[in-house]
Structures are given as C-alpha cells and as structure tokens.
Image (cartoon, rainbow, N blue to C red; front, side):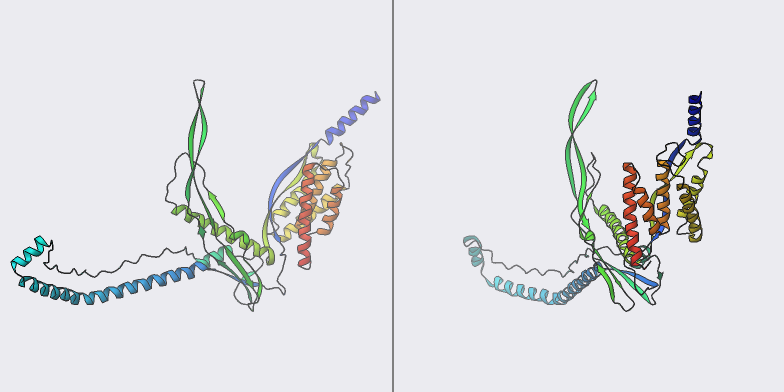
Length: 417
C-alpha cells in the first residue's frame, strides 16, 4: 500500500511539473560601442565620395576634344588649300598635254606599240577634303556621388553637419573586370525509357569573369588631421563571377551583365567600408539574431518563467526605439530570472527548475545582461553555466557568448565605461 502511494505521489509530481523547454528565435538591434572612439568626442560629420574614374574620364574627354579640334583644323586647312591644288593639277596637266600634242603621230605610235609606253598625260587626282571621324572615348561609369554618400556613408551616433565636424571621405579607384567568356562542360546524363537506360552527353554553358572595385577611406578631424586611412585589401582582390550553368548557350552580349555586376559591387563595397568605419568610431545600430527560451508546462507551473520571457522579449525588441521601456522590461526580466534560479535543482529531473530549465534561464539572463552591457554579472553567470553538464549545442552557445562578452568588455574599456 505504501509503495502504491509513493508511485502515485511521484506520478502527481511528474504531472504537475511536466515541462518542455522551447526556444524562439528573436532579432533585435543594439548600439555597438566603437573600438576606437574619437577623443575628444565630436558630434558632427559629413561624408563625401570621389572617384578616380572622374579624372580618367576628364582626361579621355580632353584628349577627345583635342583630337576633334586637330581634325577640324586639318580639314579647314585642306579645304583652303584645295582650290590651289586643283589649279596646280590643272596647270600641270595642260603643260603635259601641250608637250604631248606637239609630238608627231609616228612618235606616239612608236612609243605605244614598240616601246609599250603610253605617254599620254593623266591628270593628277586631287582628293576632296574631308573631316576625320574621331570616335567617342569609352568612359568609366559615373554616379551621383552625393546621393551615394548620403545613403551609404552614415555614422550612427553623429549628426550630419559640416560645422565642427569629422570629414569622412571615400575614394573609388574604379571598376575593373576581365573579358567575360562563355565556358562549357559536357556531362553524362541518363534517360530511362521502357526500362532501358541510355547514357548521353549534354553540354552545359556558363559565363565567367573576374572583377573588382578597390576603394580607400579617410577620416579626418576638424582641422583636417588624419584620424585614420585605409585601403582594404579585401576590396583590391579580384572576385570571380560565375553564372548558373544552363543547357542553352547564353548571349555573347555581356554589357548588361557587366554593368549590373558593377552596380551591385559598388553598393556592397560602400556597405563594407561604412561598417569598417562605424566599428572603429561610430555607435553602430547593429542587428543581432539570437534566441530566448521559455518553458511549456501544464497547470501554469512556469508562469513566472513565461512572464520573465515576455519582459525580456519586449525589452530586447525596444532596445533602440524606446530605451526607457527597454531598460524597465529587461531589469524586470533579470530580477525574475535571478529569483527563479534560486529554485534550481540540476540533480532532480522532476524539479520545477531542473537542469534543462536552469540552463535555459541562464542563457536568457546572459542575453539580457548583454543588452544592458552588464559584463560583471554576465561573467558570474557564464561561470555558473560553465559548471553545468552542458550538451554540445549549449557548449557552442556558451563559447559564442564568451566571445561576445570579451568583445563587449574591450569596447567598454576603450570608451571608458
């Protein structure tokens, strides 16, 4: 009878605390501290973009105009000289005809038949003057640089203004690419008909070329003193474009493909540059993809966990839009998670806060600490997590959090926080 009561009690406890840890992905934004903040702090900045292509285009256009001017001058000179050349040819022909006509018939016959010479004068041809055609130069692409700077060169935490401001300038070295080529490869394919397998060759085609668009960036202070300059090696390295292979041979007109690739690369490189600069000196609004855990259980046995989870979710999602509300909700979530962890019993699988729930709550707590930039309490929490018998998945998550907080600690130190 006692055994039966014990089994009933165990089943009742298991039913009451039957639980399942669930994870929900969440994306939120936070302000990342700079690694090299400007000291003393500057509030304003203005950004500009220049391109080496503009100077190259200007040189080509200048040469084009100079060639056109030379061609026009040559034409006008030849046009002016034309009547005199025609008259000279006419005069020469008239004199030669006079000499020819003075010869006897016998002399003319001898020269033509016996000496095989036709001595009858031929009037010199004087070509009509014409303008040489000068081909238009092939120019590199030009863009609306002020609009590009306003769109892509943005420093969070600063105000756009030119008074007492940082100058943030990017120079585009120009777009380079190899000649696109159509490549092909024959592959074996198999067809089955009426149970008979037949192997045949199929030719696949694709377009391939290499390309790059080097850039450099310079940030200077209010007195134009250089804060830093860099020409990222990543942007000088050639990339390879390779289209999707197809059984149909592509068009050999690559102009649109090359142009679209250039425009895409321009935007990608400017984004790369802006992140590079922002990481050093700005307060970049950064997107973070992570997850929060909650507990699905019967009889609302984990209502407190769900409430803390909801507060944490609201706090994270409003972190950069409503700082007051975010801090309020995150503080409430942190306080609740800490209270819940006082019940932790990692050795009792039937405990309300067992090992799985404990691990989940710790990771939620650490995420909230990160959003609040609380590295001290996060370090203690990470140490506690490290003492748990973690799954491989949780070990990897802890390693990522360790790296995240190491980076945050260094950034806080650089900013005097």
